[in-house]
Image (tube, rainbow, N blue to C red; front, side, top):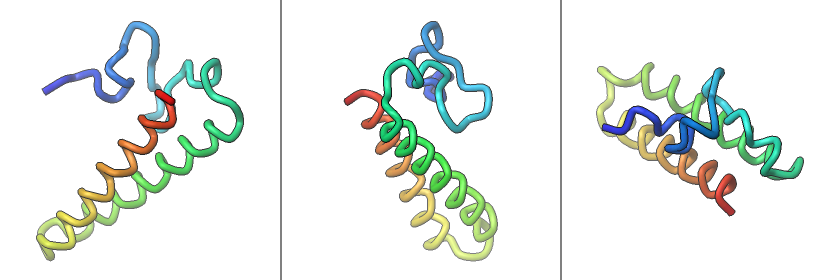
Amino acid sequence: MNRYTYCANNPIRYYDPTGHRLKGDEELLNDQGLAMVDYYASEWKKYEKLAKDVKNKNKGLYNEYKGIMTQMKSLASDVRTS
């Protein structure tokens, strides 16, 4: 497991003190890009909470939420690298 995925696999250039946005994004992204990253991060956090709430109650829903979380993380990463 890669311990640095939280900072786009580049722990020398970036750091992520809150888990929502990389410090350093401000230099790379315009306001629209920053807003998109913030949106995807908030959606990821929302589904993370939902997944925790249903983890032991509904395995199918839990897996669905985990899939959405993966999509949100991927979308945020795509915005950063485009």
